[in-house]
Amino acid sequence: METNVDNQNQLRRLKWIAILAPLLFLTLVELARDLLYPDLFRSWPGYLLVAGAVLLGTLFFSEAIFGVIGAMQRSLASQNQELLALHESGMSITRALDLKSVLQQVVEEARDLVGARYGALALLRSDGQGMEAFLTSGITPEERALQGPIPSGHGLLGLVIEEARPLRLGDLSTHPRSVGFPPNHPVMRSLVAVPIRSHDRVLGSLYLTEKEGAAEFDAADQARLERFATQAALAIENARLHQEVRALAVVEERERIAREMHDSIAQVLGYVNTKAQAAQGFIRAGKPERAEEQIGQLATAAREAYADVRENILGLRSSLGPERDFLDVLADYLGSWQDQSGVVVRWSTEPAQSFRLGLSPMAELQLLRIIQESLANVRKHAQASQVEIRLRLADEVVDVTVNDNGIGFAPAAPGRTGVPRFGLATMHERAESVGGSVEIRSQPGAGTTVHARLPRPSADLAQTQTQTGARHAHSDR
Figure: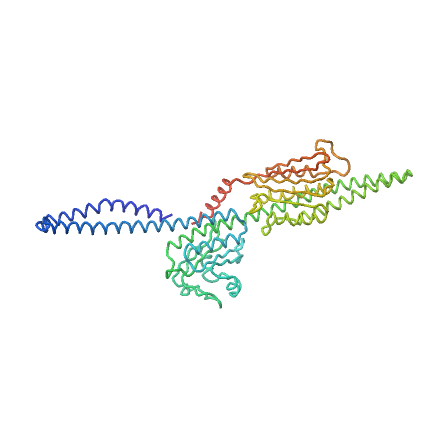
C-alpha cells in the first residue's frame, strides 16, 4: 500500500529530526548564553532561565515527536482494520459460493471500513446486458422495497460502469448525469464509486454515499474502496465459475445415468426375451408348470426394472444446485427412498454442527450417487429392515459409510445368477473419477457396509486458487 511507503519515509525523517533537533536547540541556547547576555547566564537567575528553556524545549519536542508517532499509530491501526476486513472478505469467498450473500458481505464491510452511511453494489449480467442484481447496505429491506425496481444504470451508476473509472463527488446532485432520487429515497450528497473489473471486463460497480463525520470522501477512502472492488471481482468470478462447473457436472451426470439406464434396460430386455422364449418352448412342449416358472421370473425381472427406473428418476430429481446444499438434497432423497422401499434410514454427520463437505461440485455429485447406488443395492438384494448412513469429516477426506442389517453376501464368491448387477462396479468408477475409493465389507448373515473415502481440497490449494483469482481480478487496477 502507498500508506506503508509514506509511513516508512516519515519514520526516517523522524529519526533524523530526533537526532538533529536536540543538538540544534542546545547549540542555539549556548550561542544565546555566550553572545547575547553573557553576564546574565553566569548568575543563578540565568541558570534557571536556561533550565526553563531546556525544559520547555524538551516538552515541546516530546509533544511533537509523540504527536507524529500517534498519527502513524492511528494510520497503522486503520490499515490493520482494512486488512482484517479484506482478509475476512477473502475468507468468506472461499467459504461461501452463493454470489449474492458474498457480495452483500463485501458491500457491508466496505461501508463500515470507509465510514459511509449507505453502500450499494451493482452487478451486471454475465453478457453485460442489464443488471443482474443490486445489493444495498444501510437501508432496511422495507425501505428498499418502497424505492421500486433496481436502477437501470442511466445515471451516475451507469457513468462509472461505462467509463470504467472511479468517481468522487462532494455533492452528487450537482453532477450533469445525476437523475435525482425516487420518492422515499434517503438524502445522499457525498459519493465515492469505483468499477468492479476483472481483466478488461467491467462486472459492475461498488459505491458509497454520505461520509460519516466529514463533508466528503477523500483519496484514501477511494483507494480502500478500490481494494474492496478487487474482492468483489474475485467473488463474482469465483461464484460464476462454480455455477458453470456445477452445470457441467449435472450434464455429465445425466449423460452417465442415461448410459447406465440404457445398458441396464437393454440387458433386462435381453433377459426378458430369453425367459419369454423359454416359456413359449415349455408351453409347446406341454409343460405348463415350467412355463409358469419362467413367466414368474419374467414378472420379477419386470418389477425390478420398473423399480430401477423409478429409483433412477428419483436420483435425477435429487440434483445439487446453488440454492441447495448437499445435506438438504440428501435429506430429501432419503425421505423419499424410505417411503418407496419401506426400509428405515438413520443418518448422522460428524461433526454434528457446522458440517461442510468442502468438495468440488463433481465430487459432491459422485458422493450423492454412491450413496444412492448403495441404497439401491439394499433395496434389491439385502432384505434389510434398517440402514445407517454416517458422514464424517477428516482433515483431508470425507469418510462415508452405508451399513445395512440385511442378509449380506460373500464378496469373493462368484456373481449371482439372474438379472445382471452393475452397482458395485459403478460405485468404484464414481469414486475413482474424483480421486476417491470405495470398499465393500460383507459376509452372509451379517449385513453389508459400503465405505467411501473422497479427498477434500487442501487449504493450501484453496488459498492458492484464491490468490490467483485475486491477481487476475487486480490486473487492471
